[in-house]
Length: 321
Ligand SMILES: Nc1ncnc2c1ncn2[C@@H]1O[C@H](COP(=O)(O)OP(=O)(O)OP(=O)(O)O)[C@@H](O)[C@H]1O
Image (cartoon, rainbow, N blue to C red):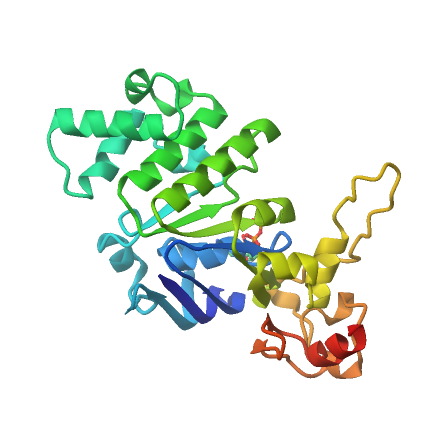
């Protein structure tokens, strides 16, 4: 459904994504994980044509269902209905995505009319059906409410209903539950997963939480400093992470043992102006050798069926074996 190949994105002079390759099939869920600032959101904005002022795709390709869309200007991509119609997006903060001056029903109508549905009664009953689908209490009544008259969890559900009402082929959820209570988080994640499977959607879920990855996704792409560094099946990556960064991410999870030490990864993601030479992760990498500081690793298929960006991938795998 979506194939992003060697994508680079700039804001003015700053290259904020340098080499992002990922793909997702119909009916499949891909998680995009990485620390804050690794370029996850920028990747999503580039795909949807929402980079905004000063932002542009500078290299690479974005192919949506066979059509190359990265060369289209942002406005053209949006006008042709790629965003909203073929790609549904759920943002971290529903207040950003929902328009405060229109009722939930009016916003649902707009999405539904993209599918060709017309007529007040038909729109209203379909709108209520969507709200019921996402588990909103009193859907009929909720149609006439403004976003501020709903709770945070309800707003998130309404946004999911609006994103799906236009019947997109690809759903992108960017940290869809970060702003919610943990109990509501689980409900909303289950809801997204259920709808994704019922509607056979391609799903990209952006997160920095491996728990979310495990619960939601079939495959995962790990991002670091504007690049994808490892891609593979969720089960395999959680059981046997290969890239030193993925290992560090998984190693920094609390184990649940009282008093157990959490292995913190020292330092932070470098920013666009201060990228290290060679491998971008080398200054923080416990496995780095001299070569890592000078040679840029490419994203390559490793012999054991994983896609990795690490000069020492084969060597470390042999060592582990
Ligand atoms: N509008 C913008 N103008 C300039 N730089 C930007 C803009 N938006 C993002 N960036 C930069 O792009 C880089 C990647 O940001 P992005 O928001 O994609 O990270 P992220 O991985 O989604 O982080 P988080 O988990 O915190 O959302 C950051 O260095 C950020 O400062």
